[in-house]
Length: 296
Image (cartoon, rainbow, N blue to C red; front, side, top):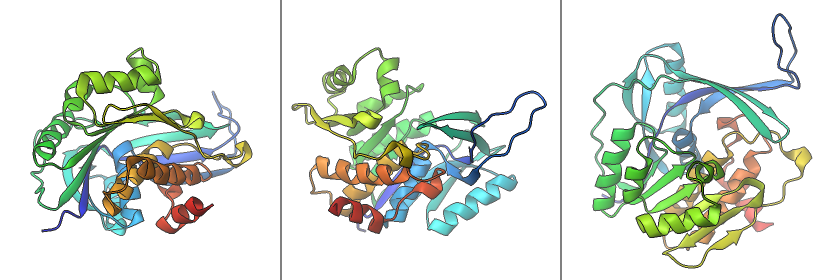
């Protein structure tokens, strides 16, 4: 069986994104400009990105049996993503309020997962991407995939309960500025720490408008600048990092022989497109859109 599928493990949200200049309080009311309703979540948005680009995708994620859970299932089915369900009581919800290149997020999350989680066959899996949610499942599958020579990737958006243990089994660690702040290190120090402490083959820090730093196989740190996007074109940055992760996995899946700077350049193009659109799921670009931007 060919290894042609990427497996993602994460937590699904429904994102309600509202574009507004005013957040009312007390008995006030206000009229918003626009809204978007769709799937949110770190590894889950990465999974949709991977599938939308054209790669076979499987996803281990909590699904509730409520009304929003039905919407979630319909969403994943519409993309053709194979979902391995883990029971929770309520679908998690995020209210996202983008403003001037930043966004405020109010979340209600049910992470009281059912103890049991699916046993997923790995014969056709070529890459595993995690965000640290579902801690024990993430650890188990990272160990299994590492032992089978399946590349493992981590979205280190922030420290979680299992992060230090999980990093022992990660081949591609792409972490955020927030992660660096949490461990009290600069981006450059964080990359050195990943290399020295965990022997991470591909270590990187994303820095928003400042681009990213990365190092391959313990070598010299390199800087990749962000693509210029005029400030008046930046509509909503929510999910841009998740799309970045999903896109570099997709690039790896399309041609694993390409060097990692090319995978990151592909991902950079995808996230640059996404920040010019409202919402999370709906801002994910197509393969054609990414390829057109790479030609410029």
